[in-house]
Structures are given as C-alpha cells and as structure tokens.
Amino acid sequence: PLLLALSACALVWSATHPPVPAINTDPSSQQIYYDPVNLLSDDGTRLEGWLVPVFDARQVLAQKELLLRSRSPAVVLLHDQARSLEQVLPLIRPLHDAGFVVLALGLRGRGGTQPAGVTFGLREAADARAAVELLRRRPYVDGTKIALVGIGTGGNAAVIAAAADPMIAAVAAINPLQSPRQALRERLGAKQAWLAFLDPLCKWTFEMAYQADLNDLRPAKYEQALGTRPALINNIGPVTELGARHADEILLFLDSRLSPKSASADAK
Image (tube, rainbow, N blue to C red; front, side, top):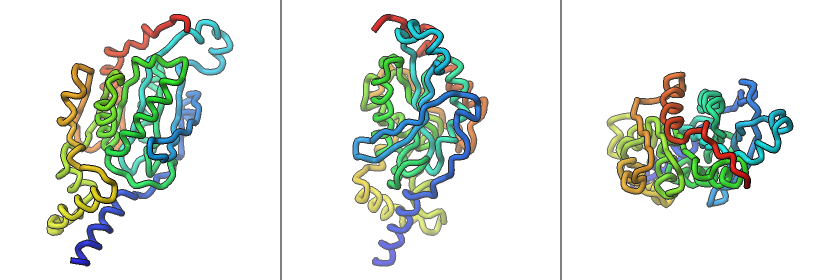
C-alpha cells in the first residue's frame, strides 16, 4: 500500500508540475505593440501576460480625444497545460487586426508565473477571472463585451470561469478535457495501460492535494450556467500548434457576436 501511495503521489506531482517552457517570442516579433502586465489570482498566485490594446501609442497621440472616448471588445487567451504564452501567439494578430483588445495570459505554473501546481483548468478558472477583472478596469475596454478563448485545459478554465461570471459575453474552448477519465488517461495517471489500476488513487491524491473535483472538468456540466451566451466548444483532437484554421474559426465566432467595428464611442 505504501508503494502504491508513493507511486500515485509521484504521478500527480509530475503531472501538475510540468517543465516550464521558455518564451522566445512575443507580439513585438509581429510588429504589434503590447504591455507586459502582472496580476494576482484569487489565491495570491502571481501571473503575467501580454496586453495588446487596439491602438498603439502613436495613434493615441494623433487621435487622443476620439480614442479616449472609445471602448472596444476584448478577448482573454488561455494556453494549454505545459505550454506558454507562445501557444496563443498565432491568434493575437488576427484578433488585433479585427479590432479586439487582446490579453494573452500566462496561467499558473508556467508561462512565466511563479511555481504552482497546474490543475487542468479547475483553479486556472480563477486566473481567467482575474484577467477579466483587469480588462474591466481599462477605460478603453467595453466591459460588456469580454470573451474567453482557451486551448486544451485553458479551454476548461474558460468554460468554468464563464459559467461563474454571467457578464462574460462569450466563450470558446478548443479541445478541452471532456471527463475525469480523459484527464487521468491523458494528463494525470500512468501512461502504461497495465498501471490503470492506479487511476482511482491518482484521482483521490489530486483532489485531496488541490481541494478540487475532477468531475468539474466536464464542459457539459456548465451548459445551463452558460445559458444563451455564445459558446464554441470544438473537440478537434490535440492541438500541437495553432494555425490559420483555428484563428479563422475563432475570429468568425467572435466577430459575429461581439462586433468590434461597432465599438462604443460614447463619452465617459
């Protein structure tokens, strides 16, 4: 029994503390202006991100009166487990050019954040909500038109966060985990089929360590909470790299619902 318990602990630790990938490029590599931002999740975990406004400093100086009165829709981008901000970089240019404020968030445990166990979207949902609150405090963001877009476990975080906040306007999840079984088989448990008997012990160890319920990963659980809000949940299989197809699908979904071109220009 002791050996089994130690094996489960080792598997859970390894799965929730993946290697942190280095960040080698940022939006400036695409000639896009951005602000590095720092924020805190609700449990004190420090997070970092890239905030890309619709207008750059030169445009603000040239059109300051008009721009100070305008508000644009915004999108929070959430990467997958064991990935970094670079994973969502291919989405930034299309969304920026379409008129969205973009915040790419480095979730807990990777992407430049302090070490913290990853939880496949369960606690990361609080990270997403912290990003939404940061955007709502920006005078150039329309707080009624903020969407969440997540990849893999970032998609689970997006769905859970949107279900908890009825003011989030839309949510898109690309290949989120669908069940505790999938989380155990693909992320948390032993990869060898003959070690599947450890799965219940790994599940219990994870839930005790992080005070989280793997059953909460099911996107179907949040259908009622999401109500009539636009939701795109696309199970296309593992996403290694985002391409033009992903960007086009996400942009079409958001553009038709949040209408950047009709951003409010009402005076504050």
